[in-house]
Amino acid sequence: MRYIIIGTGAVGGAIGGRLAGAGHEVVLVARGAQYEALRAHGLSLVTPDGQHTYRLPTVDGPAGLGELRADDVLVLAVKTQDSEGALAAWGPVPVAGGGTAAERLPLLCAQNGVEGPRLALRRFRHVYGVCVWLPATYVEPGVVSAAGAPLTGILHLGRYPHGTDDTLRRIAADLEKTTFEAPVVPDVTRWLYAKLLTNLGNAVRALSGASDSEESERLRQRVYAEGESVLAAAGIPYTSAEEEKARRGDRITLRPLPGVEAGGGSTWQSLARGTGTIETDYLNGEIVFLGRLHGVPTPLNELLQRLADTFARERRPAGSLPSAELVRLADEAVASVREPAAGRP
Image (cartoon, rainbow, N blue to C red):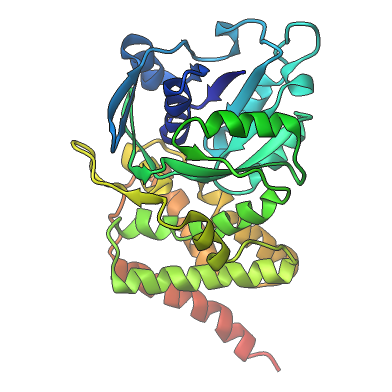
């Protein structure tokens, strides 16, 4: 199988690099400065076992490849807010032997949140969810780091919304020839929703700083609790923290990497790079959406969504909102919900 990595950022670069290092055919898809750097110098993947450079075919869209192969696997690794454009571009591409990518090829959604597979299923017949446990960082154009050891990451794979198949087992076998574990599960959405909960704290780190503080940790726990209440009201199952911990164990431990500054997650990286967009609408915003559907107030997640969107749009620096100020705003947001309720007869 040939793997086409649509979105060679931190996650896509780590997956593509590790697959290439294990001898698999890989094509990288990128835009702008990343595309230029990959074309000129290859993909540099910095890991605890060294720095690896992979000279791989690189395109900035489907036109660079022409007709796709019947054994191609599409790996969607763009941020969720960029999914629609990527799906629209790649879905109609013809495949050798007839049909289109949307009709014939497997599409793996290696993304945060739960919206990516839903968007994909509107266009693609064969959609697979990927629960991504992969600490990776976009360092600079052409350079990606993955600090996990002994495993680079764990990628739970499943048909979306449920089920497994032989295609998925072949993909998992390819991934497990690298430094990934790739469990094939029949209930991938349970893992995706559990990962969504852990991602709700991304905005706290992105807004007020990557380093942990006691007040920031308390706020994150309140944000998680709000998310858990919403999922309970919606009747959406998710894996427990105990189940996740048992599966992950100590197989992904972060190691310091030379020349790579520790970041604060994907949301932090979007603000730090000044991309102008952010995925918070599909993380905290998902909880807000479900809360509105099921009548559960979500003042903390609404606040984080609004602030993160503002920071991204105005290109404010990551970590520039003091933790104490963020906590104060959070307390005010919660109070504004409680006070009208208290005043009702």
